[in-house]
Length: 527
Image: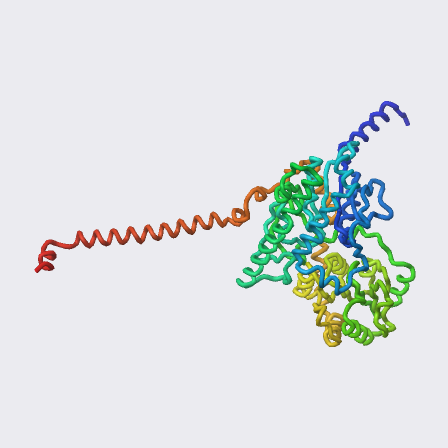
């Protein structure tokens, strides 16, 4: 075969030109120290790496075996309180308080203070220009101050919400709230039908948004001007520069609402990209559990062993009744458990959750209602018992209940009877298994995989610029978006027209009355 050195050189130049054109450098900033949230963020980052992009990450949880083009440039581990397997029920109920306060302070203003770190300042003041960043991806929960990095680097900013929308999530891209029929992540209900429910939902959403703005505007604006640039606009103005918002949700089953092209749902992005595996010992135990397995966890932070004694004893007794079915529990410190754990219960400090939920012997998932766990169980057709504790978990669990794919138990009202009834219903009533199969089908049925959806729109922004998906709604006040000024003008116009019609009618009647009165009638009246 004839080989041409010139042709080879031309092909190399062409290949390098293609790589230079399509391979971009992206900065991912994931400053909130909740480990489960990073599953979503890392799935997105790894998806972009697979597309050939260089991704530099600021995170509390660096990958152990990162892909070639994935690099942790700032390790935030140790800069915030350690939450993994470290949060008791007592602490979370005392410290988290109002969800808005949690988002604004614990996950907001306090996270903005990390901008002061020496390593962070080095990235801000001395960014590498070989090549410079083309895009910044920011995790948004409450710390919107990080959107200001786009202002500093003069590049588009994409925000990622790792759970359902809260009232202010879509503001940056002008996405409507639709409180007439959609409840946000901070509501404790899923459905809205009556007038009073619509009123409550609207007031709840607007008041929470106002409170969040009030708690964060001054503090986060000051943080940006102190740590990013003294002439940077306020955090409310910076929020309106967002090019795209990715939300870890999907309309089936979590609720249908209108949105602008700048808000894209990517719910379950982490599931298909997960490569975790069962240990050989746990895989053998799962395979041998032919009577079925119940998987029980409160996520990466909350300790089941800190539940009240009466609740733990109720679990013990109820689990013992279902033997030979087995129970797999995530327990960080087995020594803190009450004695008397049934023989059919296995505990472990760490459990690869997706492989367990994927296993054919898993029959039920008992969860606190975290979004990622719910999505994973839904994906693999596992019905659930939800025990919500804080934040969006109440709304998440109510979604399960409304779709007949789960039962809710209140953490402060757990009894042996309520547990027995819930376990019996899920395990013996086929409606739950059939419902979860149906909802799983809807959740999976999409034009493309979540990671492909996410990477397409991220690349779309890099190809077409930060204004390519911008909605005109971001430049309007909320009452203008809601057309309150238009409806008010129409109402006032109608009132004015009605008043004018009445006034005109009175004038005409009076004149007609005077005209119709004859001289003889006047003389008669005088006499």
